Length: 569
Image (cartoon, rainbow, N blue to C red; front, side, top):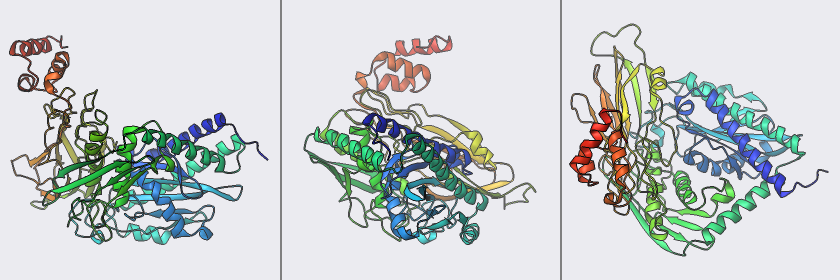
């Protein structure tokens, strides 16, 4: 019988397990077909014990995926049935309520066997470009319109892929090769994780994951509870107003700190919307837990035990607890604002810890291109679906400026222009930082960005806008100023909506400006050398330097002269 490892050995194994799932995630990045996975990192990967408890997650990935997936594996075990789990199996779903919140995320779970015995599970999730239906957007009135739903089922049984499932998928989506390729990539990355786990078990002479699993969960639970116990026993409320689809929506939360848990209660939030911006509870929970965890215990690895003390409550049929068959395609629109709402409450409990509001939700859009219909199209014109992920600015932090064009809380990367243009006949004419978009403050908000998109000659397109903060920009904290709002219009001045599918005729372009993060603290307290640096870099205009920060005209002129001479601060 193998000797029980020491705590030091268990710590080494814990770190090794995290590296195993990171390699699992990187395998998905390298093999995925969708640009949303390859370029933006919209994915997650993790390893679970035999009970479906998450032991470790990959660093690469998003909180919305991995924290929702933490609950999903238990659903897979229940649906498949323990007596029906075999070596070589792979399970699949995109069920919004038992997966990660909408049909455009596919989750794969693979049981891991060692010497003929089940020792745990690997799971991964990826956002796919198309799942049929109306396409990725908020226009649907029910989940049935949003695409093909795959219930929890076997993608492969004892190593044999279900070809009937593959044919059904191919018959219902616009990009069948891309989607099926992503499905195989998901299955393969779980297999990579399994192989590396077996290597680890052989190296450390393990027969199961019970010992290391208990070590991980016990230590994570204890460390997290110590952080919570050190907080004041208080409750506070936070509130945000968002653009919504046709009318504004409100998120309300009451955060209560107990000795052994923190409860976020979203009673009072808006009701379910008619359009697809609703958020299933599993996704709202993922981001509420994430917000509090990064505030008080950021260095404790993410797993079932470190997440358990963060609880969420929300009445059924509120916009953060939408149930079937509510439309949920853009559930991230609401879910990505959950952390700022929680922070607005938590700042009253522990002042000076959390950032100002940021852009919040990703600034995504999907372009559906086709040959022009107003005149004969060239023979090489083609249909294509191009999805691009982009970011506004993050909110300023108590001691640091916000990050420019950086997604918080999702952590999804902005897609390179080259990768976007390679995916279809789309042209990104402009992509650059947006001066003056970060809210002024002692710490300045992160800048948003400008984007200008069109189609190659001979094409027209529909654009699915997925934006917020058009009418409700990020609010500053402790005297900081608001960030700039989102704007969107065609290049001829035709107004466009922040959400929904909209036609763009041949030859027209869409001009977008993504929102900035808000400032933190009084702008008059910002050190003048930092103001001069921002001015020299073009982050702020001379008008902002003068009016918000109090830099006088002579100082502004000196900075601008230095810039022309290449001597900028």
